[in-house]
Image (tube, rainbow, N blue to C red; front, side):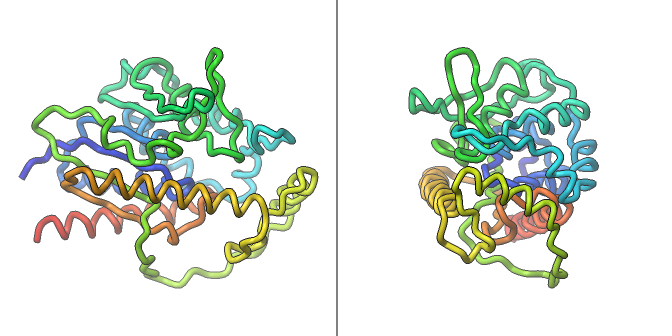
Length: 289
């Protein structure tokens, strides 16, 4: 059985923490990841993995609670997006020093969308964090990232599962981790109801009130610009991803249900990583049979 793996990590918001769990299982099972390509959170986790700092990053994200996530969210009143994205990148740089993509131990690329030209941008050279920040810019949430005269938003807009961008060496097998999959969510253990963090919600709602955006109180509330936009983007990503997956031969397909966690559940990193581990074990078990 081939053990060299070209790894593709999808977009999916906070569910992208599942990429960490999937990578851990692949390595524990003896697979050698020789290249990685990612979009959005896949670009973030993939870049940190390529830099050799995934363990340190995992320890940090698992320590985050709601209030720490809020402190890292530099909210702003702007028609370009709700979050500047500066604080989170600067904090990650303390864990993973900045570097150039071409100097990373393994080949890596991130996918973003050039919003003015309406085309895909592939970052496989240059500043690592420029590539990551460009790729994670979820439209209407993160402000577009500017490089020179170009503005970039989330790579998932054009290529949520960048199979065609991963570096292949002819000896490897293809592994894809898709964390926005349209599959049922198998609930393993019931989750306890978490107390509502009033200060967290109050700050978010105060901001959205000024912007006249009706952020829904629950995922079942389908009224409001924020929810309409979020669901529309999700549908678009699923359609593009489905077409991409159907057109490629994938050796290891690791899937996490889009219903498993919310797009913005960044304070649930530990649970989401475990979800990625279980999904990887299930995929590898199916491959053996």
